[in-house]
Length: 306
Image (tube, rainbow, N blue to C red; front, side):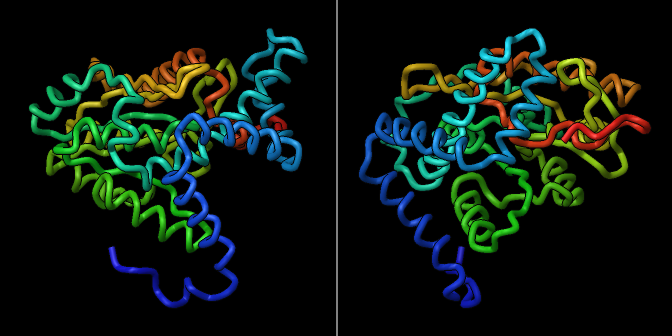
């Protein structure tokens, strides 16, 4: 990808460039264990400084884990912010670390499911979710299956320097990224028997949404997974990366394609996918993105939660 356009070199963008270069240097110079330790410290600092995000996490954890005591949720919240901090350094590792630094860190299970789904010739929706391991999980997958036609969907970043960096690094590792609203590009990739890496699990306010339970709470859920699978015949293959506690290692799981998907009911499809993510969250609840306002959009007549 060509270098940044001159407008991104203006002085107001220098702090972002400096931060990115510091992350890149840390990735090169510091062992992964040290990056994890630094991330946990950074995450605790962020928890104390980011009152708004802390409040969002408290609300989400209270809604999704009502059976936990207040002190238990406080412990989970702290672990989550530590995971967020580690995730920052995982972005750097995913973008800049050499394969040799990462190769022995991950155990990938089920890659044969992805290859078998591609043999059908109708594309694959690689279904993921917003965990703090999302970026490094994509890098692990690219390392394990570098010959696969992988396209990553993403939400364009409001910071133009970060947007340039995201497109540059993801293009280098996965192929051209696809904006989350670029339906035509998604359809083209799937019809060429490509793999579209897609995380659908954020609050969705536009049309083609339904309210489906997530931990028993109605959540505005995008039905694009069903619509894309219906339009192309693509297989929907669940994909999840988990950081193992107390180590620098990861497990990456690729499951068999969902059977009978999509069904005849978009709400039932959405509930099925949300339940799948719930199972992943229960494996490592601190690693899910609790600082996102997942329940921002409410059914008609229900009060706001944030």
